[in-house]
Picture 1: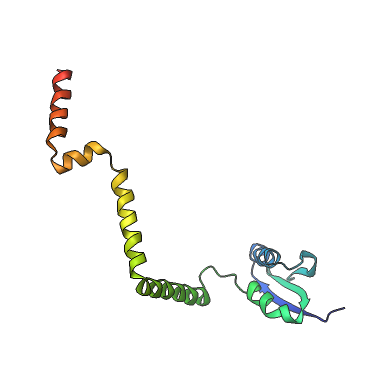
Picture 2: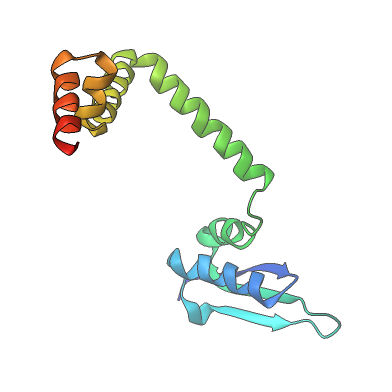
Length: 136
């Protein structure tokens, strides 16, 4: 039987503890290896998970990833943004092509009569006049 170790975390509410449990379960940890213990003195909870020694660091990361925007996630967002900028710099033709494609799509979403009026197309003006004349 493999050697197991305990990873722990403390949470201020049941909701926060349940979110940590959900992160662990969705990442492949067995639900029956996770225990919640309510504090006697307040509404807080302690979480314990029994796992193999090689999975302790991953379990700890998942347990403590509770804050929506932590310094760690802000740092990760910075790395992702710089990666996107670096990709755009290294592949300018792809960025140009994506911009042209977006412009083409937007252009084709505009109704034709609006496009003809904006260009000053004489045939569009004559059609507008003939429509007005029929309605009189």
